[in-house]
View 1: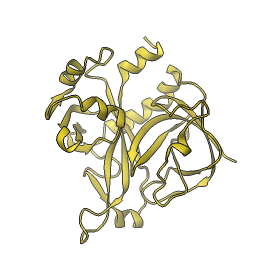
View 2: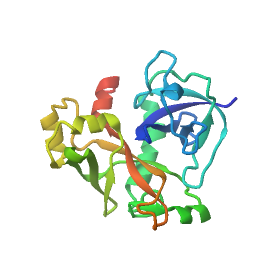
View 3: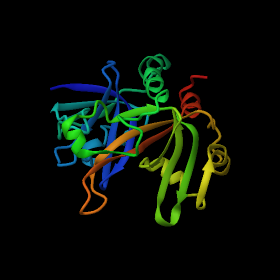
View 4: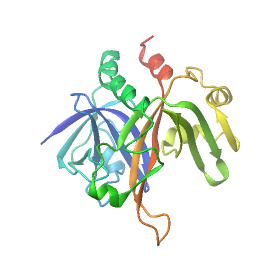
Length: 246
């Protein structure tokens, strides 16, 4: 059965479970493991590792799969073997990050378009006609701000990319749990780092993993759209410190 090693770059809440994704260590791009369910959502019985932990961002995870399960909005999907435990096989070296991740960041961070257009969403009917080339991207945003509404449990990222402004919901549970400590408002990266006392963070060194969500209709009369989401918030300075790269 096909087995893949991936650098985990997304661990995002999805329909009561998780969406996990990453970049393959063999250099063949993005990979999203999915369960044999309509929307592919993963639950603890799918992603709990051999040692009892859950995958974390920047773990290298080894996953056994049965077959590819491409969909027009998620071309990276692979169906997992349901009874095979995932395992961690370490963390990436600096050389792996430079080789596998840096080109991805450069590719997306210089363009005004993100995952096919410069909007917050893509029409699902359009994707049925012309499938997405990719539903995942790792970007270095500019003018990044954090929009917080704790009363309604809504957390969003405001940023610009290639001169285009974006505002996406955050589905990274760890970063949301940090932002929950702040009062309602819009915060700069400097303010968030200071107020949350994030010692190893650099305000100019955030990366975001952007993912295309499942088809969703805002109202019963509207057509379905796939919305763009912030599936992971990564601070490069924190990663470098934790892994001893500096």
